[in-house]
Each structure stands twice: as structure tokens, then as C-alpha cells.
Image 1 (tube, rainbow, N blue to C red):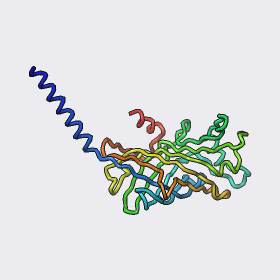
Image 2 (image 1 turned 120 degrees about the vertical axis):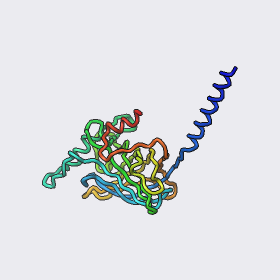
Image 3 (image 1 turned 180 degrees about the horizontal axis):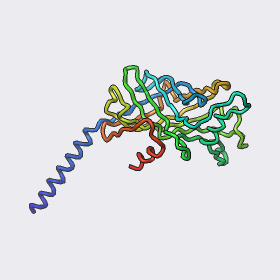
Image 4 (image 1 turned 180 degrees about the vertical axis):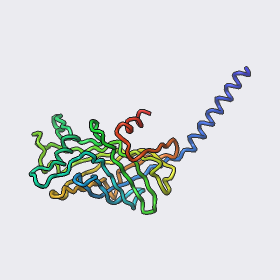
Amino acid sequence: MSKKVTFAVLGLSFLIFSAFNVSAITFKTETFALDGGGSFMDSPPLWSGNITAGTLFPGTYWIKMDDAGWPADNPGTPGNERFDFIFSNYFTYDDTPGNEGWDGTWPSNVLSDGAPQWRMYTAAGDTLGGLCSSFRIVIRDYNANGILEENEYADKAFSIGFICYINFSRGCFLSFCGQGNCSGTLDLVNETTMQEELYVPSPISPSGRLYLRDTNCTTSTENSSWGSIKTIYQD
């Protein structure tokens, strides 16, 4: 009988201890909408602009890609060597009837490029940042002919998965880390410079999300690769 009582007390103590630990964790959900610009022709490709709505408003952001090994465009040739390299190495064609188009994915599953980096800065002096676990661009092939045309590239959709590391958190986010996502449009606004507008809706209903916590946080270096991203999800 005494053993049963002892086990019961130990079990109750464990539940109380577990409940205490869970209650000690602080969770935050931050929202945002983005509007800015950038170009694959820049080195490195950098999209930046304003946080236009949400709990992180007002503020600014940037998203930067690793372009090590990408060629520059040769202005003396009729083609664009840099764009051709990007399109050949990051985009694959989806021939599913009714859903034909090209899917671009960063970081590459084949190339040894680093994951895109990101930062968000609030006007109050707070900072969040880390790496993009995924950056995906979708180009629809509206006439399903398998040929990329100017009007198709001009109107693209994108989605991003974020990993927020504690060593980039500042201000009220000093001890926080987590994950998040957003999606929106990436429209070509200047054909000559190939400048694009990155837009995450909307000022009325911000759709971007970051899910943060102040426990079980890890740190990361700027030069993390696709291999280290996969290791995170295996843990």
C-alpha cells in the first residue's frame, strides 16, 4: 500500500512540475504585411522595404539571397546570362493539367548555396531575424506551352518560411525564437532593371505570421546551408 501511495505522490509531483514548466514558457504571435522592392540582378539579390501593418508595424525589413557562383549579365550579349542561370538552376516545370507553370525554390536542393537571410526592425528598436527555410516563387504558364513569356514572369506569386534565431533577436524579442511564414506577389515593375515589387497583404488584414517562444531556442551563423536547415527539422 505504501508503495502505491509513494508512486501516486511522485506522479502528482511530476504533473505539477510539468505544468509549471509549460506555464513558464512565453508565447508570442506577431503579424506583419510587407511592401518593398528588389531584383535578382542585384548582387546580392536583396528585397527591402516597409512593414506596413500588423503588430510589428511600423518598421522595415530585408530579405537577402546567397548569389555566390551566379554570373553577372554581359551587357554586350542579347541574352541575360544571370537570369538564364537562375532560371535553369532554381526553377522546374510543373506540367499538371490546369496548373502548368514553373516552381522556383531557394535554397537549391542541388547547389551548395546558403539559405536566404532576413531581418525585421520595428520603429521602437526591436529586431527579429534568421534564415528562410524556404523561399518559393511560382510562375504560371497561362497558355501551357512550356515557354516562359514576359507577361507570365511579370506576375508571380511567392511564399516564404522563416526560422527566427535567438541570436538575432533584440529589444522586446531579446530572448525569443521561433518560426513563421508569409505569401504574396512578386511583380516586375521595371523590365530594364528587372526591379520587382514584393508585397505581402495587407494594410487592412496583415497575413504574415511569426510564432515565437522564449524557451528551447538555438543559435545559428549567417552562413548556414541547406544541410543545416534540414538538420533543424530532423531534431
